[in-house]
Length: 178
Image (cartoon, rainbow, N blue to C red; front, side, top):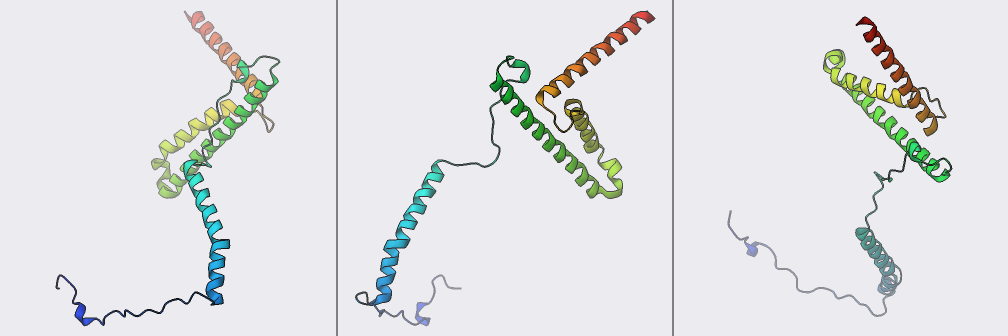
């Protein structure tokens, strides 16, 4: 194969090209008017918008809310702080639900992938799911459909009191055996 193409085998390019007759032809006149009146402003507007968006990127995902004080850190008569703490709790609740759903989906995918051998192959995922369910239940269980940050706080307080009583009872049994 030669380095340069053999141009002699091709017909020469025609040097004669018809020129556009701009003057009185209505098609060319309408094209020029359309180009200047409709197309150009729209194109300039679109380019300006694209430049603005390039400078100020807008991300529609992973919105970050600042953490607000929890209900225990609010003053008694600070209604705004109570409301912010409630909204923070609701966001945390929704995030925890999504985490639970993702881990449940992982277990389902593992079981679908391994079929009959899922009992041996998916032990780690199932154990992780059980741990997450336990944590979720300790935090949000028995709150009902209308759970609030205040109810959740009371539930945690009751759990702490029950754990303290159980620990004292266990210490008393150990002391009685000695």
